[in-house]
Length: 479
Image 1 (cartoon, rainbow, N blue to C red):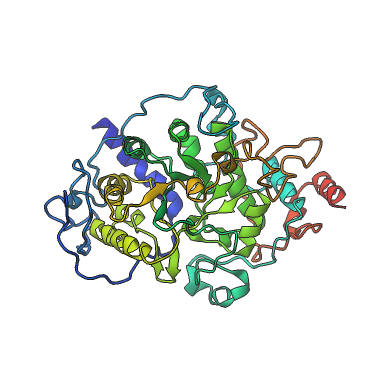
Image 2: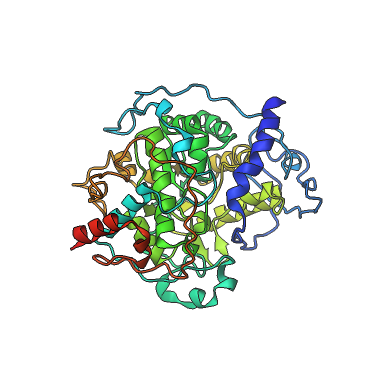
């Protein structure tokens, strides 16, 4: 009961970074009324009990190939209801342990040196006046990658930004689903599922890890930096168990609403805390809500990050289960499972594999995954190949992380990362280990309405806030 209470108290905190979210588009292609479930079928009663919010959500028909015999009944999975205790980690991964499945992986660092006070406040945009952020900005400037001068968007998505939504040159994924060649949206092989889970590590991530281990599956975890510093041992357990670890920003913002420096701070701190906890820096990331345009893409490229989206067949047909919205009381479990049924139906019609948006942040999302979606996927006919993204792309595991990547066979966009010198220091990015600075800093209050151009050899006007000596060093480096 104490475990349940603790988890219940933590869930609102974990969700705080998701305020003012964009509408999540679920697969909406109509399907025929499904036949009764085969094999084990569903637990009796598929109607959803009204959530704690007091609103009644629709009960939607669906059919699954199989379910977990120990699954929590659909009628019991709802907003405000906790039905399962958290599973404690089976082991605490010691400093010095090495993941054997990644060639050349460094040993796990000593967690006693990773202090929350050395990082920004949880679930808040990191301040841009921190020395490490200035260092990362300098590295982006020195990358030689042109950052387009695209104005920032405002909260509210496409309706609140009609000009941006109509501007095809910015390739804004949120409005219209524009993709760049660098965006990963599918797996190359038909019926291959690049399994992903967002927003953790969280209190119920160990429950998901236990199921994945028993089913001999692995996933790609897109991790929020604020959660990593809160649950470092859970991240280490996931990593050592053979799951791919990737970046999902520090505070889960809509990235196109941020200035260049704010984007760099979000990505930089998340990469840093993952390296401080695991010893490796991810080369893959997912923008929260899929909110990315060419400016955000260019900055992430300069920070050696490859964007992983999810499969999208049209503006209204996306491979998003909608599982995140169950905990908030705006989706029913039956709606999520109907979405999953539509996803599998659509996956059989395309000539590539697919990537689906799911989450490990809430108990409800984990219960849906382990009780229903994953068992159904394992029993699917024709069979699905279920792998982390790095595997589904046919890439070796060493290419998932900066420290293990072979730059001769897989060149990274910005080889100068960690080599720029400011005031006698360097390596402030992914190459720097250990915490630095204070988590008590405040935001800059930057109210610029433009992301600003940061092309090679040109210093963005927002950098004028940097101390004179630092600015001079930047000019000297770029001359």
